[in-house]
Length: 189
Image (cartoon, rainbow, N blue to C red; front, side, top):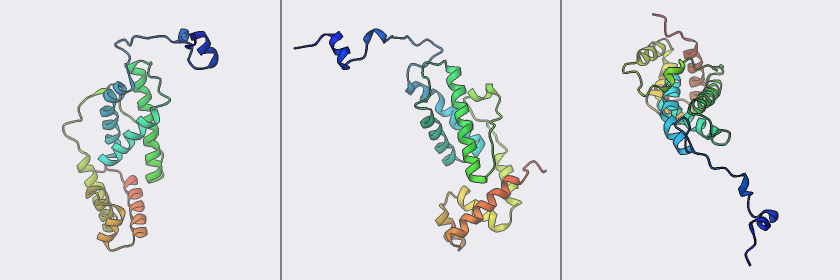
């Protein structure tokens, strides 16, 4: 025999339907998590790519941002609040990234607030020229390990083989090269 809704509530079988409220999402709110993701993934990726300079790390960091945001994010917040929250999570992910890679704290994303919503990357960037200057300022072995790892996209093991060194040595060379590159001032020209 079917039990009444009151009996079901008492037995814990159903939630109290009186406490449920339907809400219509207005233009300033997202209708679902999918909409939040689709509207912000490119913006977050571009923001992180501009800071780390390579596709693989920017993709990983973007994934981290959205996975970290999945549970704590209040999907009923306004679009601006959600974008601000995602930017804060991106800042945290970026700080973790630089701390683990270089041992330095980078906790600011110094992008003007209105630039965070720009849909297009700048047409021309001076990043390749600046990266070339930094690489040119490194000792040959340091420059070579960074070229193999980040420009050629080789794994540490493959880079070690190409340089004729052990994997442990390649890791040390890469670490030292990244630290030296981080201290280099690309504006010295």
